[in-house]
Length: 133
Image (cartoon, rainbow, N blue to C red; front, side):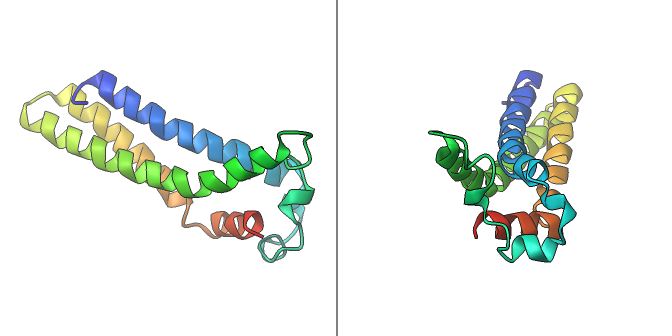
């Protein structure tokens, strides 16, 4: 993992987790028009996610909802694991004077740190309350 290719691979793993979360949790929030309501109403259970898109899609809606709920747990865990792996690789490459590799891993660490910060925002908390209703 102490190569630029390793940094790209770790960044791709982190990006995959974020894309699944965005596609199955954030996108349904916007598509269903829940952005017009106060976050307290959304998190409080006034809009049941199993009655809204994508849960209403025939045959696969339930699975999409399940994967969205699972992504709320796995996306932050994946990001934290990538931060540790890429941070270690960055330090390791820095001790070997491989500055390009260390820089690539540092960029991955910063990106994952920014994405992880999203999960502690009030909006993300409201999405968790909405999805786990």
